[in-house]
Image 1 (tube, rainbow, N blue to C red):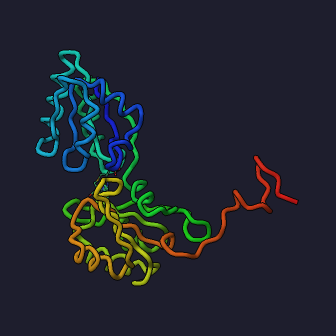
Image 2 (cartoon, rainbow, N blue to C red):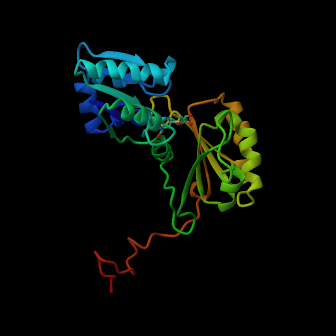
Image 3 (cartoon, helix red, strand yellow):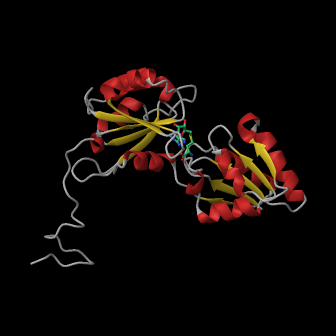
Length: 252
Ligand code: SAH
C-alpha cells in the first residue's frame, strides 16, 4: 500500500495521529525534503528506507513505490502541509492508477492554517471577510486565465499567497491593481510557520517587498493580506447573547 500523507506545516508534532502511525509502520518513506521538517523522520521504524524527493523526478518516485509494492512493502509519500494544495499528488495518483497500484491519502494541517496560528488570527472575521482566496503569483508556473492576481485582488477579501515570496514587487502591483486593497491594507509575511525558527512580519500591501528584502525572506513563506489583520470587526452572531440559534435561546 502507498500512503500519501500531509506532514503538516513544519512543527513535527503537528502531523495527524493517523499520519504519525502510518509513518511508524512504513517500510519506506519518500519525503519532500525541501519543505518537510526532517524531524518527522524520527517517527520511522528501524530499517525503514528513506528517500528525499527533492532531487527526484516523478518517474523515479513512482519507480521506488512500484518496487516496494512488488515486495509487499508499505510506502509513505510525505508531502508538506496538506497534499491537496500545490502537492503535485494528482499526477502521481494517476500514474499509480495506470500501474494498478493501491494508495490512500491522509490529510495534514496546511501551512495557511499554520500561518493563521502564528498570527493568532482568524481569516473570516464578521463584517470584514467571509472568504479566503488561496492563490499564487504567476511565475515560472503560469496561472490560468481569469485567475490573475489582480482579478483575485478585486474582491478585497482575505488572501493567502503561496509560492510567491520571490515575486513581491509584482505581487504588490497586482494587489493594488485589483482596486480593493490600498497600499495601507494590512499584510503579513509568515516565514516557516510552526517551525522552531518561525518568523512573522506584519506590514502593509505597500511594504511587502521592502519588508521581505530587509529581513532576507526569499522562500518558505506565506503572504497574507486583508482587513482580518486589522482591528475593526463585528462580534459573531454565534456567541451573541441576543441571538437565538439551534443550540441556544437568546438571553432575555
Ligand atoms: N501543500 C503545502 C503547500 C506546498 S507549496 C501546504 O498545504 O502548506 C510550497 C509553499 O507553501 C512554499 O513556497 C510556501 O509558500 C508555503 N509553505 C509551506 N510550508 C510553509 C510554512 N511552514 N510557513 C510558510 N509557508 C509555507
